[in-house]
Amino acid sequence: MRSQWIRIRGPIAEGDLTCRAGHVIDRGGGVRDGIYAGWQWDGRELAIEQDRYGLFPLFEWRSPESRTISTDLLALVGQGAPLDPDFDALAVFLRVGFFVGDDTPFRAIRALVRAVPQPAALPLSRDEAIDAFLELFARALARRPASGAFHLPLSGGRDSRHILFALCDAGHPPDACVTVRHFPPRANDDELIARELCAALGITHRVLDQPDGRAPLERRKNVATHLCTDEHAQFVALADHLRAHTRETYDGIAGDVLSQSAYLRREVQEKFDGGDIRGVAEFVLDGYGTMMSERALARLLAPAVVKEVTRERAVARLTTELARYADAPNPIAAFFFANRTRREIALAPYALMRDITVFAPYLDHDLFDLLAALPARLLMDRALHTEAIARAWPQHTRIPYERKGLLVEDRWAARALAAELLRASVRGPARAWLRTSAIAPALGATLLDGHAGRLWGASLLLWLDQTAAAAAVASA
Image 1 (cartoon, one colour):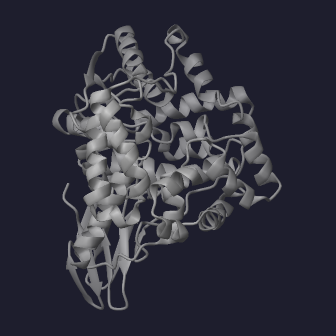
Image 2 (image 1 turned 30 degrees about the vertical axis):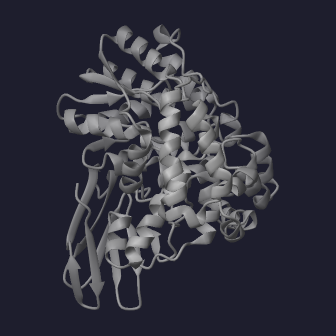
Image 3 (image 1 turned 90 degrees about the vertical axis):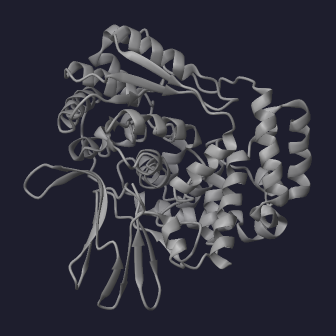
């Protein structure tokens, strides 16, 4: 799907006067489900369309003379949008890996987002919630039938397993399931589990190897995902496969954050209950163990840049965004859905794979309204989705889920990536942003011994290089 854009100057419009992206599910009575975005210029006014959650990406640049909207952030760069860095946005992104609210790397370019529905808490028992979950999920799939044979991505987690089981029960199994191998050092427990699931159901299982060289995939991903995430390079191979083999597929986006979120912690909920939103922001930065530490950031970035993207800026920006969700039944899940799920996770199905139809059953309006209304206390053990799947398909409970944290060693891959990172840090556009004196010796050591532990900042370093390159081209 090519990038589309429209620029409005007074009564004059240029570019694509009509844009339709994603898929719409017409539920009648004026209710439109699905994940989609677009616009229509009627000669006088611009009408913008977005799905209920604003998951399909749109970006906007406003100047005193014009308003430009695009399905692609880099198209706005090509149209001349100023590329002054947004240091408040970057202070968050460089630590947590996703942008919040309508932030992007550049002050002049905003993501078009909308308020996510926040339903009132439902007084359901655990059993009632599980039964409703299973029933509404089956209805959600029934509203999203594939028009022909299709391939289904399958991991070792719960979301894709639930989709697979329910499709088989409905008499619409996939033609094949597809599992993509991870980049080392992450192990491939997914592959073994998916193979066992497919064998139990009699479905063809395909495993996709990663092409040689991670850096080119990171760079392709950065372009396709609008410079808005440090994740998803592993899914470039999956997107290529799906594009070649299917017109439609399904994605488990939001299943985990709505039903069994790893981010749900008692100490976080207690801070929300006590009105300590700043404390929640600090916990997001420090407490989950997957974010960029201050020490690591100082090793990666040049001192002048560290002064611009301070921790206090990150805390202040996160506090403002978190406050929007303080009254939700499950506030931390609501925050992560509206930000990480929408601004980062959605970029896999709706940026990398935007030229095929990707159904999102967990975002069916009825199912979302149920799961988003479940109070945090009902989900605090982070086991509701596991219980739901076991209740519906007890014959498959012996098949495990992916074990997190398993590692493998690939010294050749580590050396190849270190070489690319060294070139980017010494000669790339981002070298003024980087603390090369700390980065280069570590990368040189990995070139010698192939130890991947020093490559923890690989995705972010390449993202910085590519973002700086876009700014350099625009200013040339």
